[in-house]
Length: 86
Image (cartoon, rainbow, N blue to C red; front, side, top):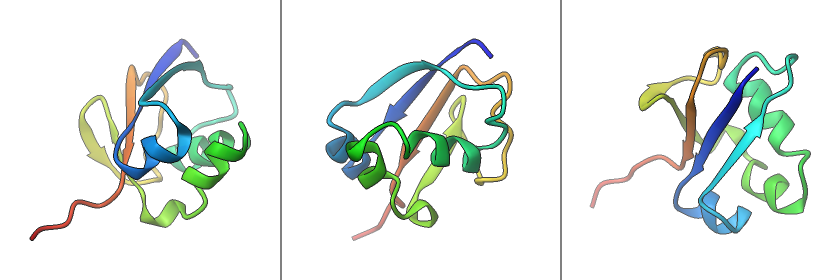
């Protein structure tokens, strides 16, 4: 798979310590769920950011998707917490 730009927002960015990565995603990572599991193994900061995957939202190429969405062909994948109103 080609390199994919990963964007992190709000507390996801704070826990990882940066707003983005560009990474080669392994061939066995098929879905957003797989990607979250793989990212959580990249170090303590990633493990903290992805410790509760059910609370995260994701977008592939700026389209909101669920965690079952396939990542093949994605150019950009973003992770962010749910938006709350006030």
